[in-house]
Length: 490
Image (cartoon, rainbow, N blue to C red; front, side, top):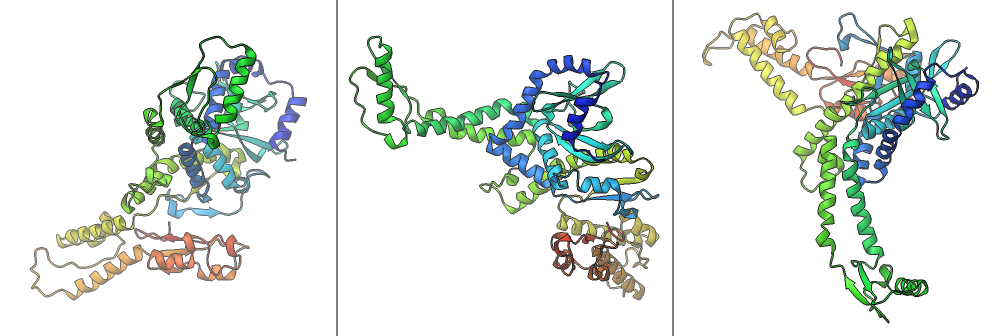
């Protein structure tokens, strides 16, 4: 019988005898109270600084939008030879981790934790009879404490509930994804840990600006009195001053002092340079994450070239490493829990790095020229094409060094046409349909259909997935993939 995490924690706390490492975890937990508070501060920082929110939110949503699939490994070891698996308990779990989280929300929550603290924690709820995972739950990093063991290195984990109750978890109940900490092998590290002081500076500068306007939109000052005021006189002076001058609506009113002298503090926003401070703070945050400026939505110094370069950098160096870490956890920690049924399978994702069409066209031209040079020098045509990564299209070349006035060999002309045709075919797109009992006839009929370019392919499959004529509408699982280097599909 499936149990939610809340039910598992309450049930285990009420009925289960403490595991052997429980006593050790208490002392270890007290030593990490400061670290836990720091981790909580890192999590809370997302809602305090706009630049940090933009970076974490954009990264998490990009990773959550990536498509995943389960595949049976091929004997050749090549990705293109794998067979997609559409029915498996592990795939069902990954698509719906628990009754309250879809896959995208689950991944997004974990990505937020990873960006902010360098740690992602998943707790597994099992069917106790079959001992297979039935639910996955994301857990806040500041509520998890590793329990070291002198012999086993790690005895388990201690979860601290919102009401302070501590629950011992076995190692097999937890999947821990992290950016390794250089000095603590049990924890992770994230950019925010190095940015807390800078984030405070940015937040305080924003609060100072806010208070500047709340306090008459003018710098503060002092009222100096030449004698000591009693409590009643002090309260009366303060109340009258606030009544007449506090707030933006009372700005620039003439002050009347029955006693005392006004002393200006002589500070202005220009003196404090808060605009420059906030700009520098935002730049420091972007540098810590390695986040390209165009991806934050900035347009002041962005053109199409560096915007596209920023998109590639964002996907390649920020999203892909995190997706690889998730894939590693799924394949080496989750799938083995399914025993023999999980052997020979692997999870994989669709690469989010945008295609560089211009670069691919340049590389293709260079390969074709290199093949012509090799064949013209007398090398075997098939081997030459294979050496430069082109399809195996045998042809007879023009003699090496022959002048352009020499009539072209008909065989050369035909081979050239076949070569160009092969290059064109290598760049075609092909429709791929998930063939099972849920597939509609239009999708099955269009399975294997080829397109000469991306525009034509995306006309039938907007965004690369979902056939426009599918009877299931938005639930279509079909997609279009690019063929290259003589492959049938990606």
